[in-house]
Length: 164
Image (tube, rainbow, N blue to C red; front, top):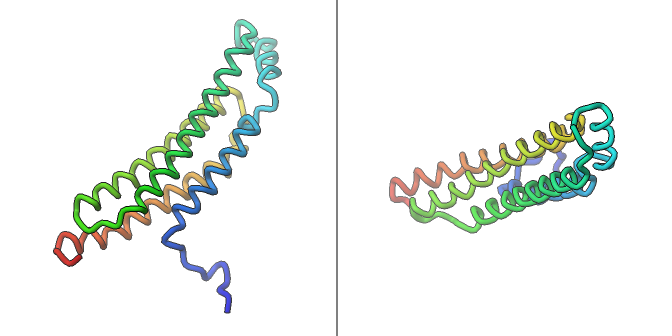
């Protein structure tokens, strides 16, 4: 018997599987150059409107590549940290803290992803509505990780009482 989608409970591994989906979403966005159709055309228009003083195509191409590298790196680190946290089943408080550090690092990289996407939008005058699904996806990943941390509080309380 199947369960309706709305009635399904969230999987304990949802943070892990969703981090992979998020990474794929961001890779797709990067392949489309963050919604900038043509960097050279952007530079020409910015120069024509007086927004920049000279047509520096190579500089803007390098800026775009730099943002692509940063977003790719942060997305990879979100997935890596979530997977690393999942490999640890804490049996001591020290292991619990290590697991929590990985979870916190994943959240930090999610926040850095949001920051980088905002910087791309500012630099290349991209419509922020284009990034709305990606920001929502990153926020969802943050929420999944935070709920995971809350579930881990039960483990922490058992460890503090000595009931492992």
